[in-house]
Image (tube, rainbow, N blue to C red; front, side, top):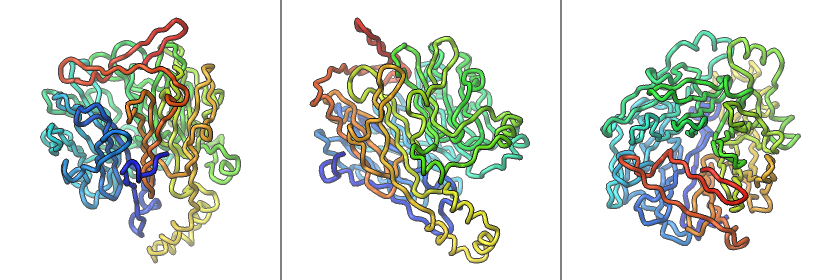
Length: 510
């Protein structure tokens, strides 16, 4: 873990609670901010962008040797985000196909529609960025979590899938009644790119539009290896995850129940990668099951037979509160093996990153976790559920902050697991230096110093971002290969391309 005095990255996602805005009035208050990585000026060094929910966003230029420069204001004052807004995810992609990475920022929160409109900053090539979301048709005012750019119609340019979420919790008994309703600001959206203007084609493409969407994670991959990108969406609460399989004709079919035997219940982040080197993409989704037995007993929400059966009757599928590792069997089926693999319980988890961190040819797993307060603490929930307490809060709202402050707060280290090459993983938190306890959310991996191994960057709540330098190349003298892809046409970075590496004893697929 590098100190900010060395990296010059002093960014912190500082949030402040009050009587009107807190986790009791807005349940996604502690979901944190995002981070994006990419070479914005094409100098061969990866730059960083952090979103802060309430404070200004920050853009850092990589100057080499883990030294970064804050260029937010000089690049565009608007990059900091709108005043009084709630920023969430951020994505870097060459949206207009000019060979320069652009920046797309998502907004949500209990604010008006114009304050929530997402922003698109087009790279001008001179260190400046211009906000052009409305011009491109991407100034969506929904409750956004994250955007991903993909060429879903294989026409050579980048389209966009927007992950949204509802900010209103829906009672379990109402699910059947609202399933066929439409909620434009809460549902996910698919935008087709037509000469750098994006059009919402969600309904036509088969993207579910009901109010039950509580999207917290999205990943794109060719799950069935037919040459077309598919989309996995994780949903919080009782709505099942969505697995959108590409039909090659501009539409998708949701096939989660056909492909998966069971899924995470309160699904958070998701990543897709081939971790066992068989050439087929596997899928990892995260939940909130603690590893520690005491925390399981004091925090775990009860899962009983009656509620499970109610979910089945309402077509909500088989969901369990733990991480799920879906092993691709290569025949259109998946086997869920997270418990076998030793990665099923990593507490309140957010961002899974499947990548080879020790350069042994097999992909390992990093998982960020943390929640500012123990919102599911059983003692707190019992107290909060008391009718007299709720009546007192209604009469005197300032007492609400006393209740919020009474919730316990527990910091935990993030998780990192080494791939054992046999479908199992070993916890390497201590051995690999992942011991700093934080409240972490968004994370990325990248080779920040171009030394051949993957470093980690993590966005934390109420403390500075974590920059982890990977020293495995220096210590173990491992080998690596670097490949820079250049796409034809507007998809300049060849997003969606596949790379296969074959050696005598093994193959790798990225």
